[in-house]
Amino acid sequence: MKPHPMEAPLDPTTALLLIDIQNDYFPGGRAELDHADAAAAQARAALDHFRQHRLPVIHVRHISVQPGATFFLPNTPGSETHPLIAPRPDERVILKHYPNSFRETDLQKQLGALGIKHLVVTGMMTLMCVDATVRAAADLGYSVTVLHDACAARALELNGVSVPAPQVHAAFLAALGMAYAKLEGTSDFLARAGR
Image (cartoon, rainbow, N blue to C red):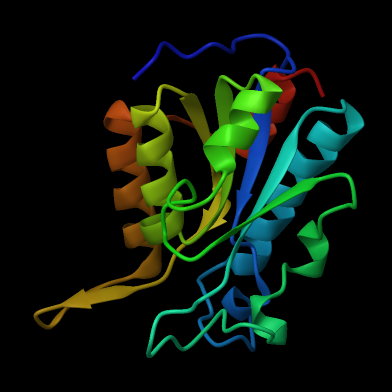
């Protein structure tokens, strides 16, 4: 992992990545996550900061095309970006079909064109698309900050062992924090970034 670049205000080599903050993950959706509304509110605070300071913002939106998919289906309201995070016309949107936002997309090309070296990541799900994207970003040489309270997870089960969503969220983020990313709360990040 590259040394973390930011202990001062952000600069144009930093981009905000908002991963899969889509309607199906919210109450009433087909794949509701734990505390999705609270995570989206924190992601919006980060988004407001990046917009205010005219820093790069990239939205990632998942469309499920695999057989048997049950959410984020094409042309459904659930696949749309949540209104709280809706992209502006001048903001980039990456469409993906896999958990890793870099896989079979032009995300890396767009980041290169912008001269991005540091990614600030928010999104859903912590245990899947956030995890896959953060690991890929670090492997590609980006430094990464994950805003831990601007991400949301769900419960898991394996061999009769149930893992509640808060523990899933904490475990996946703690693992990322070991080698792939700096973990930070949104309010602390914004204070350090010079809000």
